[in-house]
Length: 197
Image (cartoon, rainbow, N blue to C red; front, side):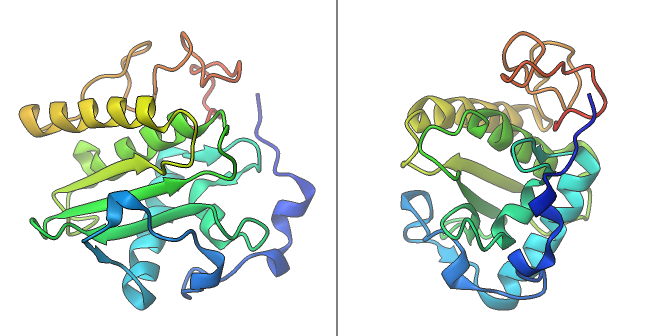
């Protein structure tokens, strides 16, 4: 399968610039970021540029829109969707990342948040960013947020205990989320090199 971008995804008029910070085109920070130092301005833009690179390397793509998931933050047609970040108040070596999907029933939320966690915390990240850990949660507006966030918390605990990412179910490769018996949950084979994880 080849991911073909939607015709509208290439229109730069619909997207903000990676170097800018447009709070009106971003989701409001949710409960996972409450009480922590939410990134804004240049700090947000800098980490989000790094996110674009990590997601490109790991092929973290939103298959609905046919683009790198980091681009969702810039998509002016979805101003309440994307990632917000905050430095943990108790441990500045930890970054919190909260993903708000486009809808409360987005079927990709589990796979995309898991793939994001893996991309940011992969063993080969090295000095790619200044944080020892990037914690990821899905915004509570999503109908399956409790289940998804429980799974993300388990992955996080395993990473803290072992110092490396746990192998995913299925192929056992870093990119495979293990969702839906070798697929991303939408019927796309995880063995296909164009799948978004």
